[in-house]
Image (cartoon, rainbow, N blue to C red; front, side, top):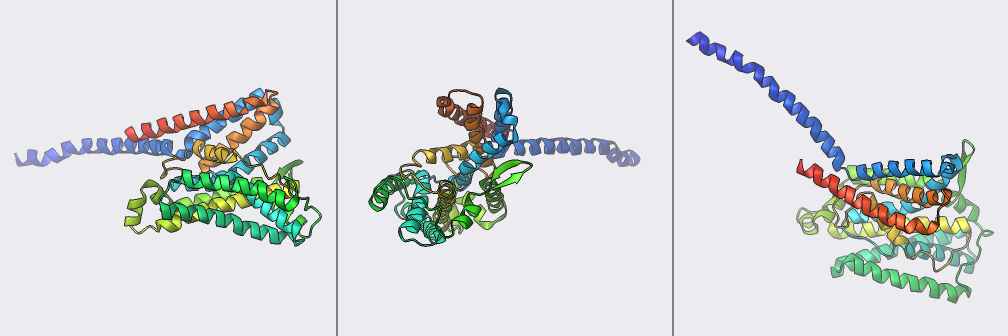
Length: 358
């Protein structure tokens, strides 16, 4: 009996290997589910689908120069979509982002021309002004507790009126004067609006800046304490404050990041066209927000990535240029964007729910 009793563990040993294999299979499924739950996965698949569709519908896009144009269009949206996405992950959004771009460009252009100073002086003052607008939005939001929709809508209207009124008052026109012959212009253009040759294809410098900013934003979100703060305040502001997260600092600096993005894109516009129309920028804020949402960011905050908006902006650029190269009526552009936005939101919602259920 004792020998039989000793033999029993040997009988039970082989089944013990079964759960290990099951755990391994379960672990593999968990990896797949975690991948599906990533906010950028859905928009990546959507971007690939849009890319393939327009390569078939518009063969001209297969040309290197055409793709460079698509990337340029994407970069001008993507540079602003990145800070807008970070702000959305932090639980807020900014309706003044579009006109803030024009405010920055107008500030640099008018100050440089009217005071006949080096354009770099205008660039620096415009940066300070853009950061100040962002800080103002964040400060009012934190101090009053008002929704960011109301705060930034008010800033949008203020900036829109100031852009038009001050430009007419200073220049006597609705646009700034040409600054292309002023000191420092060539150096500033090289930084913000130059091009370089890649295999005979002219590529805009904004494409490089776009990818650099995306890499930096991804590093900040995933590898820094500040990135943890962004997710924390977006998930639950009160809970974040309870565990020591500096909510006020985080919110204000996120709005200032949007201001920085507006400054950079504004400088690109100024040094690309040498002059700026004061009435531009209206409606662009919705494009930036839509690119972030398509990229997987939630309006409720606490969820998203920096890579997703890169693909979201690329989809915008592809659709924008693809319609033109396909010879379709460009009036359909907004309809495509609306359908793309709704589809991306539904796909992201389905993927996240499926991953959570399992």
